[in-house]
Amino acid sequence: MPREYLALLPEYVLMPVPIPFDLNRLRDAALLPIGEKLRAGERLSLQDGVTLFRSPDLLGVGAMADAANRARHGDRVTFASNQHINPTNVCVLRKTCVFCGYARLPKEDGAYRYSLEQVLAESDQADGTITREFHIVGGLDMQAGLEYYQSMFRALKQRHPQVHIKALTAVEIAHIARIEKMSREDVLIALREAGLDTMPGGGAETFSAAVRDVIADKKLGGTDYIDVHRTAHRLGIRSNCTMLYGHVETIEDRLQHLTMLRDLQDETGGFLAYIPLAYHPDGNELGKTLGREGTSTTGFDDLRNLAVGRLFLDNFEHIKSHWIMVSTPVSQIALHFGVNDIEGTVVREKIYHAVGAHTPQGMTLPQLLTLIRGAGKVPAERDSFYRVLREFAPGDTGEVEPAGSPAAAVA
Ligand code: V47
Ligand code: SF4
Image 1 (cartoon, rainbow, N blue to C red):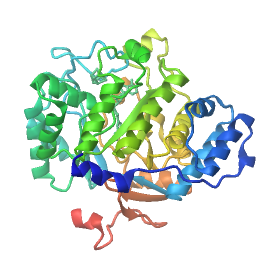
Image 2: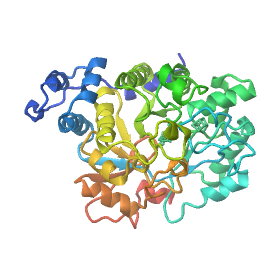
Image 3: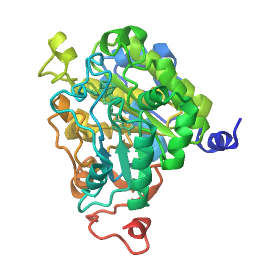
């Protein structure tokens, strides 16, 4: 086993720990054995996960998730100052990922592929904020191979040396490997050399083969998604993971998906965070077929997915709420349902706005601080490895970086 892989293990693999929790807070008797397991520091079974999803006592589920979260993070809520860049929306799977409204065929209206200059120009637009992370994902574009991304990452690192590059989903890595006729491992090594620091969690959707047949029948399968992340972790490239919920999946599909993520985390400890993603039915084929246009997931289901993520994924340190997908009010309440991290100041997000997300496209630092403090929590800015850079004391507006802080050092 390579040294870097072993180096991940002692620091990051997390075991369940006993969580102090008052069982009197549960109104659904079916949740009692789960509450008892939590207090004993025992791992939840797949059936427990199903019970958590089915229980009418959402507040009971949330209270357990909140206790599990507080045991790890107290009242601290972190965020990163980041910028999303989507360099190409051209995608060979445009016709078969029926839930996606973002992709275009090469000659279709609205198709675009940025030149290097355009990527650099976009990278300079994070006006007035101190961007610490570029989150770079796009379509599976035949004209965007290894060289396209290598030169992009090198140029970005040269221009913004302090900025972390979180880029390319497992699906994109597999696509580059296929068009370059290289192994996925060699692609990851080449990209790491060019500046790739970590990988985002997109492309997971829901792993179940039956679900994929309906929503994304040509896309990289669940086992392969896990395998690309395993390879990345083995190379010392840490990553996030996601689950798209609220389309055609069953509760059992959700648990199968979460179990696969938990198993890989047991093996490598390489996942940084889990982010459940709420399906948006507008502007895509699936929404039309299901007759779901104009509706989206419910606040109940959004909160439950976050809470179950916290309880079932007992070896994950961070559960992130993506406010663009579930709205800022739900994200704020989620801070009491197991969430310790919130998507940061995302400048010009495109993917969900292509499918009708009605949330703002970016949030400023003062807006984020207000959201977190409004939930009675303590905001803290973090880096891409979740190391806290700066905790914001009451009244601190974030306008002036304290002298000598890591934030001041990179400004
Ligand atoms: O994989 C596409 C999703 C994902 C729709 O790792 C849709 O830090 C809802 O994974 N409705 C990409 N979702 C985004 C993603 C992500 C976002 C923020 C942070 C991180 C991270 C990762 O967007 C895709 C897909 O699951 N998506 N279409 C839709 N109609
Ligand atoms: Fe392409 Fe990703 Fe959209 Fe599928 S979800 S069509 S792979 S951009």
